[in-house]
Length: 502
Image 1: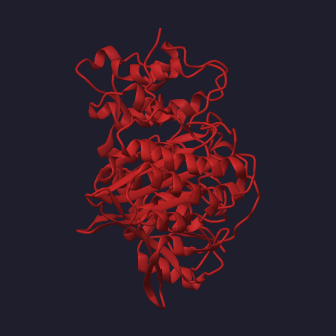
Image 2: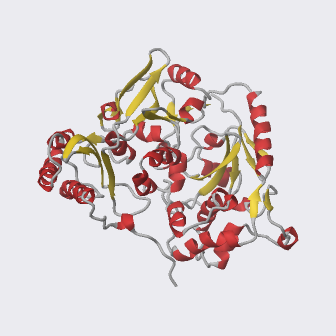
Image 3: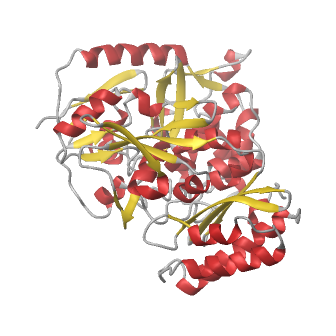
C-alpha cells in the first residue's frame, strides 16, 4: 500500500515528502529526513517537551496555533497544516515585525520568545531550551498577539509540559512574562491561510491512498472502518505514539479519526453538551470548565498542554486506561457515549458501561466512538474533582476521584462518583453512591460513605502507590469533600499561587 505525499507549510513554502510510512513520527521526519536537529529527542513519550513544535491550522477562517509533542505525533497527522520548529522563528519570512517603529526593528535577529530567554538567562545546558521556546512561541501567538497579559499562573500552566533539569523555572517564567515588552513580531496569518488553502486544493486533486486514511466526514470514517477493520485507529496519538516509540510496534495501515468534521465539533444543546470524539482535550476541557469553572485546575493537571493539544477526549475514553483522568470526571458528570457503525447506525450508553475489562470495551469491530454527551449541571449539584499524583504537574494519577452530589434540604438526592487508578477499568462507585442517596448530608454520613468507598475497590500496588495507600486516599478524599461542602477552605497545592520572587 502507498501513502499520500505528506505536505505541510514551513517558512511560507509548502514542503512535500513522499514515501513517509504511516507510523513514522513527526520528530523522525524533522530530525532524520529534514535535518532539523534543533528539535530534540528526549523522553520519546510526550513528557519532557524537548521535542515541542507549533502547528497552525485553519479553524473557522482563523489560524489556530497548538504547541504539540513531535515525538509521539504521527507525521501524516500534520498534513495540510503550517509547522514551526525552533529554527524557523528567526527565518520564517511570514513572521514579521509589528508596531509603529519598524525601522527600529530591522536589526532584530531573534523572536521575542527567544530574546526573552536570552535576557532572562533561561537556558543553561540548552537541551530543553528549544521546547521551551516553542511553547513560548505558541503562548505568544495565542495571548500576546491578542493583547492578553501573560500572568505567572498562565505561564506555569502552559509550560507544565516542558521539563528543565538545570536552569530552574524562575528565569523561564520570567521570560514568558517579558516577551510582551520586547519589539513585537507576529505571523502574517492572512498569507498563511491563503497558502494553506492553495495547498489543500492541490491535495484534493490527488488520487486516494490507503495506508494512512484520514476521512473528512463521519460517514466516510465509518465506511473506512468497515472496509479496513485491521487498521490501527489513531486520534491524537498520545498513547498509540508510545506504542511506536517505546514498544516499537509497526503499523502498515492507520485510520485517523481527527479529520472527520462531525467528530471535531462541540455542540451545545438545551439539556446537554455534545463533544465530538476528535475534539482535543484542550477544547473539551474548555467546554466543560465553561459549565463547571471549578474544574479548571483539574483540567490543567491532565498531562501538559502539548499533550492536551494533541490528545482527544474520545481517544482517552475509547482507550479505556484505568488511570485516564477524563473518565472518572465524565462518569461523575453522568456522561453517555455514542457509538456508531456504518451497518447499524448509532447507539448510546452510559460511559461506565463501555468497559468490559482492562483496555477492553463493548465496541464491535466496525464501530467507533463518535461523541460524548454530557448533561448540563443542575442547580443542586456539588462537583469536586481530585487528582493525587507524585508530581503536581505533568504526572499520571495514583488516584483520581470525582464526586458529584445533588444535595437539597440537607439530604443527598443523587450521587455520581467516578474513580480512577483503583480498578482494571475506570469505575463508578455504585456502592458508595447507594450509601449516600437518601441520607442526611452530615459528617457521620460522610464517614460511613468513606468506609464503604474504601471497601468497594481492591486496588493493586505498583510504582505509583500501594493498594493500601490508594484505599486510604479514597476515604480521605470523600471526607475532604465533606469539609469543603461545609465551607472549609481547601488547603492543598491546588490553591498554590506562583509569585515572582527576587
